[in-house]
Image 1 (cartoon, helix red, strand yellow):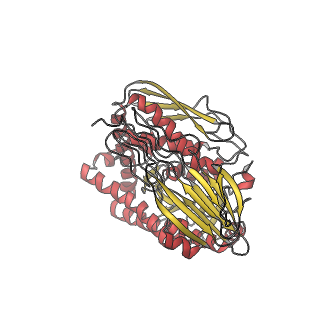
Image 2: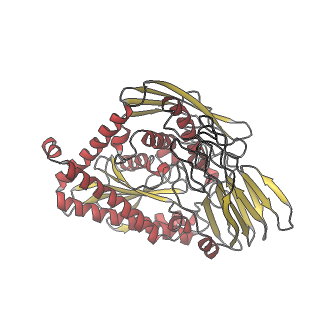
Image 3: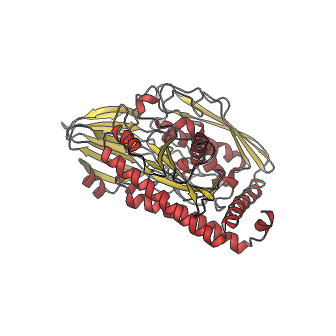
Length: 525
């Protein structure tokens, strides 16, 4: 094995690492093209990755950071539930946040890949956000949830396919727990298709390289990433750096982090972070680790092949029972989408003390989650995360109207939204002037105004409505976001950052997303 690793030239290594990444990318393309829901087909709220026979992530597509950093935990849970490996034909479905998941709408499908001799080549896995998996409100992210049961159906690692094929009883169970069962079936079929494509491509790689050659290449790609990242860590000054920021509940919830850099190794410790709360902002450990991975990669060597090797120099410590390491029965829907964003801000704030000329100002710091749906008279579930302002960077102004941090989705085009749902989009534009001033100004947020054409339930899970994204190095803060309900009778109500409301036909929800903070004093060249 060692000799095979040594025979990989730099050119061979580059070819193999792109081949592995290409498998994951093609899985994502298949998933989007086969999906039923606009949330996956249009917004690309899905991710794919490859794993070696031990369950180590060896390649990923450039999809959703919060999915990809946590997916290894779900793969590990699936393997453990099946005695350490998935036999030929077996696929495992799960969404349990306490077992490597994120929040309940994110369903992960894991399958083993074997050659014609039934030698295990590795594993393929993909994760997709399903627009509704039950719970107290359409979209499965009710703002008033006090425990995980209110957020939908929780699926521990469950065998959903074997040598005899897909298990219809499991599909029926998942579909029966959704307000839109036909859409759930279609999106799950798309996830099977994605893994099928990945398995076929991985098998083709094994035919070219040989099984031992493939496994040696997987190891070498991870080792190569580790070497690159360790080299980059040595350029960060040794020391300890601390920062804190808050989540916007009635009582502010504080996230604290201390980062210790020692030569080639980094420890991130969230000791002192507030305890988990009876609100859905609780993040499970897998989400927190994902956020730490994202920042670590951003500030070390973002061009290194993204795999498990990148993160070997990083240790993440999370106190169990805290808002960054939630335990059963804490609800977790917004922990995945909102708390992950705040963790990024906290870690960037700490790293800014060590790397003042590399760290950007705070971006919008929220995914601006908008959920609209109903069961009667029209069954539908619309989910959207909205872009906003990117923080100004040391090198350029922040971009406007983009997804930042732990999300990497696209928008739902107006035409697609109006075709698929009983909705009308009245405004979709940049929120001019919302970015913070600075040598490199923050980007502007967005305005999206949506009318419901039928009675519906609205849920908002948003942040940075009371505390604006911070500027850095003398740059000004960006503008805080704003949520407004325009009633059919013309009256307006400013809504809280988080909540669930009943809407009548003709009501409109207007979301004004935050601008990014500015970097450096304004007026300086």
